[in-house]
Length: 206
Image 1: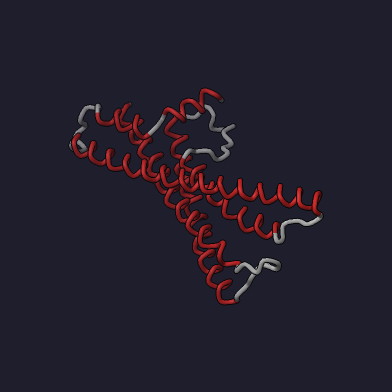
Image 2: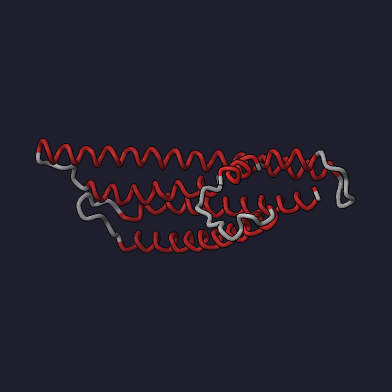
């Protein structure tokens, strides 16, 4: 299991670019064209990873702030018999935002749980193909959730729904979640393309 994780971590886009640029021409296209395409995809991947890292860091900051709110509520109730008003509302809204901000980072680093009992000894190309299919499925789901979140956000705004104690408009928490799921959709597309290119690279190596 540890060896599989190490193989997955070392199979980076940078390594695949180097392998493809040093490969002999096969007649399918100019080596310079392959270098240009792979270099461009590498730049896009680097930018996407940076954006996912920013989202994850922001989610961590939000989660830390919510932890401090919870601690303040416990201490306030124990010492002064006065909890922070609306603490559960802040945890509810902020927790939803924080969790959604972690999803793109988890996806681009292949951190999702994978049940590989059947495919543990399968060829690398088969694993990459199954990974691409999983990315496609998650892409469709995240795009669908993004669409419904936009629809729900507009409805909450029209209804004027607010929280019970702090009177915070409910729809305020939805746009950041929409942005996170749109980023997740883009990330799924990127990882799917990466897996498909890895399949082509393994076939060329053979």
